[in-house]
Image 1 (cartoon, rainbow over the protein chains, first blue to last red):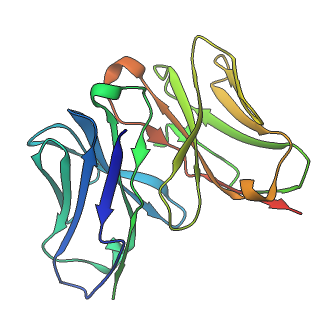
Image 2: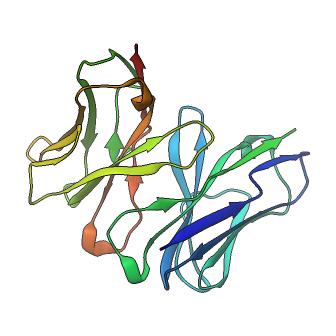
Length: 114
Length: 113
């Protein structure tokens, strides 16, 4: 069966510090991978998605970036965090060898920027 | 420009009664719709879906209705239980487009015992 894990679960970082959130998927190949952010009053905001290694589409221009160094690994980064980057970040996958059209989410990472 | 809209940020329903959550969309290319349920500090989990070739899909206490002409779908929960209290997200996509799901802003359902 397929599983998705993201870490860390909770992160408190000062403004201006770097960020790295990591996500891995097991049990499927060639998944589409996504980073979402849930902020108050804004629902689930798509940040980045990837249909393959090294292929990243950015939905929202900001100081965040994403990378996909391996087929089942997706990383969300920032060189310098802003207060407005605080939120609940969700990694998700879809498609791959078990395409049912659904999106499967990780457990989420709570980021607080102080 | 929001392509998927959930106009009710919150809804309170008594236990045992019906909960109806609504969702509207603007993109006529959407042909696959999903509902997700989310508890605090957890990732959303898939609840039920419907493709545009149907107007109703039922799974236990959960039924989704699709009105393509009105670009409207709704999720019915009968009977509502306290454990159903969560945020519900409506999502839509173009099945063949390999494009990301577009989510609404969510509706917080509170089921009162």
